[in-house]
Length: 247
Length: 286
Image (cartoon, rainbow over the protein chains, first blue to last red):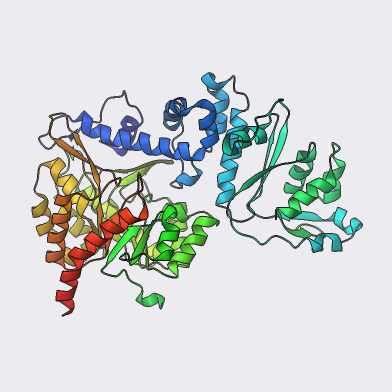
């Protein structure tokens, strides 16, 4: 029996058992093999439950557990770092017929994955806000922004920030299916999703991709620049402002 | 603390859970050291790493890997080994241990400690992997005896001889999980006392104690399952007392990973281990 055969039987609850695995008397022992099947299923389901509490709240516990079992068999972890397990969940949800009517679900999963990545990101001191004003408008427009590692941006055509806040924090649920861009920062140890002003998603995405401030503003659409920069500064999203060409 | 003299004390320790952070900082007695699962501290930063740095200033830390797949048929995951090296380098723990098991297949991590047949081929492969780990970390590791549910028809070496031979070939030490002994021997219909009596205690650097679940196998006989979700049962405490009598006092970990209880429940388990360790410690230091 090879580990490849063992693995195949492990992830296929209906499949045949590998030969050569027995009880102490040499008899076939399906219940004994099922201990391993059960350990894998239960522990990976639990990892997914912890990763996606809001997806879970949206579809219900029972449905989530059944869906997790389909997911874990199709997408077992690719790393022993289970704290990041579930990276295939958004794409899986997009193709999973029973949740196709919940168009926002993949983006909610993306938001939850981003929260975890932010939680485990490296520390970096945010830039003191005085430095921002000290630069002067011309130099500022030519500068690039270096974000702290815990920053994430989730752009969605759905109101995912409101959906997340309604389920995670008991806030009022969204009343319209408007697009929302969510910035995740980590002021101390707990990541915080904050709703960006309408239209600011393009700007922040361009900054994250390394555009100069002026370029990021010009590409539009219209948005509230002051409110957006205030969010970035107040939440400690900016590590430094880089003048001149990127290194 | 001088890093070169770091070692686990021959006292009770517990598996660290973040929900117990404040209890531990407020006074962990009788717990004198902590064990972490390495893979939970391989992020780049954030609260887990900050808590670990804080705890490591106050307690000796044992790093217990659950994902190296030392028994895997394929090569060790070099990227994962590099993460271990990074953790080992900045933390400089008092001990490092892993399992006689496999958990990775190709690019997949299956998140369970899967069993191995005890053959010459397994022995050679596992010894090579232990050599590689010890070389990468620059330290001696401890290898833990598994919980066993199945028998392999191709397995012909005795588990204790297998572990002893691995230690002889690689210089590694052993982590004796007394609950695993009880679980495996019950499942194999062999005597756990005999297992403890034959074990090479001089090689043991750490002991694990934990709870298990009870089921029945296909013939209706007891099938015990290593679950780490409940108190250590009386027969395992008796086996532990026998182990300490035979092998002397050892760093002893209370493992509780699922349905984690409030701190006082864990502290009570640690007190129970201390009551068994203390008289033997007094005798050997007298």
